[in-house]
Image 1 (cartoon, rainbow, N blue to C red):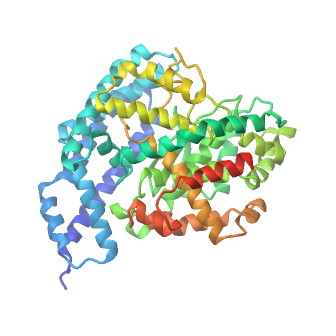
Image 2 (image 1 turned 60 degrees about the vertical axis):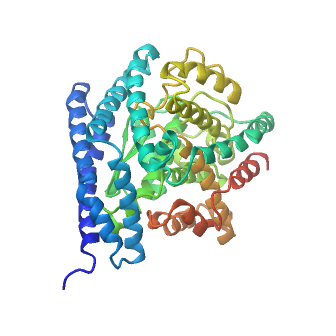
Length: 497
């Protein structure tokens, strides 16, 4: 019997093929960051540009436009209609950019990221700048073409790639309100914590022991090692595909918390990917909803769970087993260590109170860069001024721990940074909703039972994929769209309560 939805079926088949090619592309990117020898870079950059171009051709085939219109007239069920919406969104984004520009972006970002790995440790801003200028130039061109296609402002068009439906004006309003109370909260928490006694762990902490600890904690958090793995890279990330999730971290022998908390963060990303709706994998509707929702999962693990006293009690014996018995590893002291608030240089190492300041800084700089109100050469001065204003830290001349610390700009990921703090806000909102539906949640966490959190996240978020828009998903989960008041209430309860 002929299908009643032949045009939809053809689109579905094409996007399954795209998913499979993307699988290979993602593993190649992971290998570039985690394993590839330096002399392989030029060939890998060309190979990635080639497959990027191929995927672009598949997404922009002129026949797709006609198929999209025809499929919209077919008798689709609700899930198929949601998938068609997501296919159309990806098609509109792809058709806005010519293939030559897509391949050029792949080459210049690969070159910039590869050089950044050596330039950052050398604090070599002068060497880094020419590559970044090329990345910025191609990103501006992409932003303008996306803006022309969508009717959005250029920076909003970039943001829409990561957080569909959210504008920079909305983010600016949220961040402006955050600025009104965050500095005072940081001061009040610092004052409160200055009167607490906290023991520091004594190293060194061997890398082999750290890695074993990280993998054990990943298991505790439910990561499926038959469908993923942990490796090392210059900047921690989550990559791969839902069937094969690749996480990375980085190690320092004088500080095990950096690698451990970074791994916990990436595990949140990994569990989301591993639990997307399996029957629909290969279709856009089975992909993660947005990067803010993705970050809400990593921060649910790293901050909401990682900063809970019950989680510290779970970690305590694992640390003793990994590094030997120390008073610093006792649950109470460990919890104080995990919730220290201290302004610092590095975003990925920041506590959850000062972290938003790092994001606000980057949002304001990259918004100016894309608008043409600032150039790449202006970044250090803008960075230094904002770090002094927001966190009281002098970063002059320290490029490695300043504007060169993140991989995002070398990789051309402009518009991504706001998702981190939006994700922290969503994570607080999810836990507020969890506590309403599970009044004994905190008691269960104190008893070492993490299953209620995982079960709730799986049902409410992971299994939903992209069926709903972000706002609809939020309303279904919590009864309201994003409400930053939950984030403030969480911080005040945890750090001042």
